[in-house]
Image (cartoon, rainbow, N blue to C red):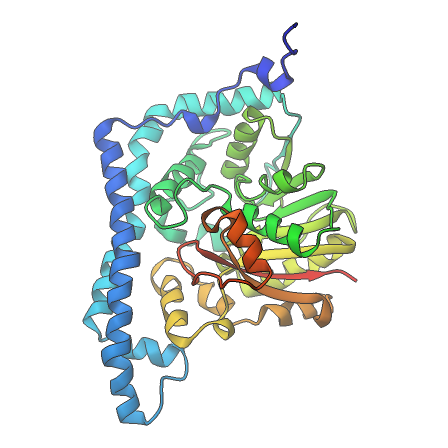
Length: 405
């Protein structure tokens, strides 16, 4: 039999930009140590801290006040003096800072190849995706003025024309950041994979033709939607050019047609009713709440009738107990995310209603990670036969969603 003709992507023979990162043994071991260290702090030290709260701080508060702490602020004031919390905080801060420098030497050494990979992908464009950047676009102050997650240069820094270096730092440093955590290892795009499968089961007749991911970065939590909805066109917007360049290079090499553009998600150039599904992952807690509300209004404009929004985010204060709220808000105080705490104080359904969605068409859910939970258990959970795991470290995602009437 004659061999099947090569696809345009196979003919192009592009090198996947993410395969060009090959640290030598010693630096690889350093990166693995940092992943293990972060796991130790977040899981083991986190458990010790919780035990200290439950066995010492909370009982002492109850004896003194005759009641349990009423909110995260009272819990935080208790724990600020607790040695377990102080040790956890110091170690976690170091664990937040360490991943990014651990990959920089190798990114600098590989930088010419990384740049060449992007340039070649953009020149050949075998998958037919698009990349639209705006040279006059002004990166918002909330990005420029705080190095979120302690990433030097945050997401937007550029050091040469068409630079992808900062995207490499966030991509490879992000692997170190999450690589040792339960449910995160070897699971890129886990949020998109989970939400897509959840929507498919909950709304079996829903078949979006166009999907938009806001705050898409490199599109890692956009592309997995196409595994569940293979006929859907994929679009992603972000304000930072390095990640968009990186995503274009990556998806062209992998044969995925993705349309990426540099836009503010609160005021896009797409026409009314253009999309059937608008999504995001870990996005809103990193931007001002006033912009979150603007983006949700824009989401409503962009959706066709019967279309849906499905945003994965941190659970708000109203959905978790005061202790866990205190733990989550740690990032707002110590991780250069100044809008974090204000966002978590919001009620997602209220924001959806104010954006134009009807209360009866809005909902939220805690959804188990699709891959780590397993397809069979996921289906049993969706039928109410078994409970979900606890939220944290990627075992369970909080999603708020709505359908446009």
